[in-house]
Image (tube, rainbow, N blue to C red; front, side, top):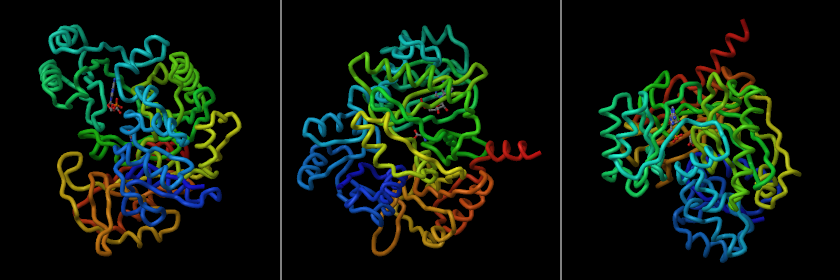
Length: 428
Ligand code: AMP
Ligand code: GLY
């Protein structure tokens, strides 16, 4: 089969790396890919937002199956267009992708179907938003309704900060994504990422994972797309998984079907594990990144049949096996990220890192030029390792990080600290 993966991040490198092992695949293509993906897949230089270009390519090359990585083309209707053209794909329709594309849509759905989440209100003007704000406790969470490249969530500690945020968003800070806002209760607890494949009716839960969102050591500083991740997530006990499936995932899948927009693809619930059990922070309609990298590292089955069963509506007949090993990923990002950073700096030592046993280096923002690998993005590499314990996986991932020479980049030194601490406590 001829498979096209859409995207250019660490997530897509990990998906290509997993798919590459499938005996069912003759040709693996990625659009637009990156400096790491080009070593294992053919590259089609088409931007993810170029839906017409992707369609034309699929027709010309007779692509059998498209796996869509990022949310933006899903929200824009890539899967709808592919389906109209008779091309099979993995991912939700635009109507179903509204679970990520509109926070207001997702919150209203939760309210209607009793799915545990933070209390909230939606607003389309600053005046009403501020009136509501005055009645709420602090800190408070303010979110742009639409897609804002992971930056649309502000946690305000004071009324002044919250009011300034509301004014900024309605003045166009996030463009049209901020035409509406959601103001919601601040929840406390430990976060976890929970992924299921669903064909609109059946669900297949994946292994659990947790990421580190904050840029700084000890989970401090501004939020990023994720500075590292590990799998499994110790906080996701059997009991917590069951509660999440019964209270959050299944009602959502049923609700989307009853609304005439069945969700197919990977549904990613960002959870807050609170004293009262799991509560939904947000939905994403794609794999998390870097979570996808640790999931792929632990996967012990052919990924393709499960993705195809998701698209075909036969997920009840699919299964996935996972290694008992733990996986841990350390993101290397350009100095300055998540703020501004320099581009086209040279990265050395990649082969040395990749040669370490149980270590795989996934590329995110890189390109190859003149025999060199250059950094082109904020998050640039994901050094991923497996080991018998999280501690072992952590040691191997950091030996990979140390093998890489890239003075213009940085990583956190404490990825996995909570899980390692739990392991140490369990061993006492
Ligand atoms: P989101 O894009 O909605 O996942 O939000 C990004 C991050 O903001 C989450 O991963 C949380 O760390 C934080 N966050 C969002 N909503 C809340 C909330 N209601 N309470 C506490 N933290 C939140
Ligand atoms: N790692 C968080 C995300 O992919 O949204």
